Length: 138
Image 1 (cartoon, rainbow, N blue to C red):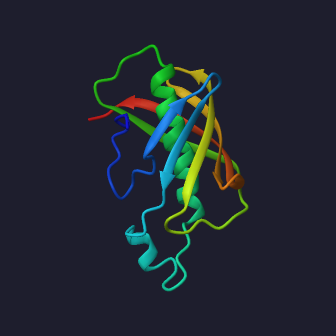
Image 2 (image 1 turned 120 degrees about the vertical axis):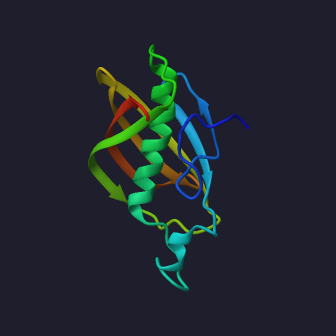
């Protein structure tokens, strides 16, 4: 398994592994049943919040952007700047193995549009278009 080029750490890192493809990236994540979010969302019926599915798209897209950029950052941070057309179609639960597909389009100086979707067992769970800005972290 390769190192994930993101500054995120558990419990906010939602990528276990990834592979670059000819036209984008595929990320993988197995939903950790120990995530603190499940203590309240919802007790006895744990469901991964949709906003975290969008975060998965942003994180996997951020990895792709790091690979596409011609500028090296010492401590890159990808900031989510915009979310459009988010749709949620399937419930995601602890233990689910997810595949996150994303494609990136450069806009200008470190700003990218990411089109992505989260799948489980071949079914689309969530789709969204996000914009991310890559900057040098502090």
